[in-house]
Image (cartoon, rainbow, N blue to C red):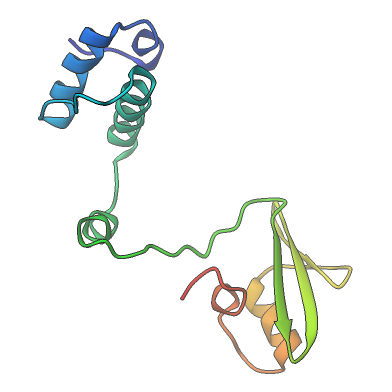
Length: 128
């Protein structure tokens, strides 16, 4: 039995457990609530459709290695204190706003702040 996301919302607990076993290849935990069954199955269905996790991401999850991203969402504010001065950057749809000026990269902003080349994501704490 293969379902789409709309049909997933209509399944009862028994049907969700069957879907879990089909998708994950193992029994669902006894304690798992119906809404979590739905969310996990739905997430897995979408991940499989879009190609799933990369080999690196699967390895990081398996080994418990934290994954850092250089991505910040539109509207996020990045704050960095550098030499006693606080610098704030707002993430835009197509760049960044810093010191009343639009910038194309965080690295350019980091260089403007420090005077030297930096990885912008590292400077603003998005990546280690």
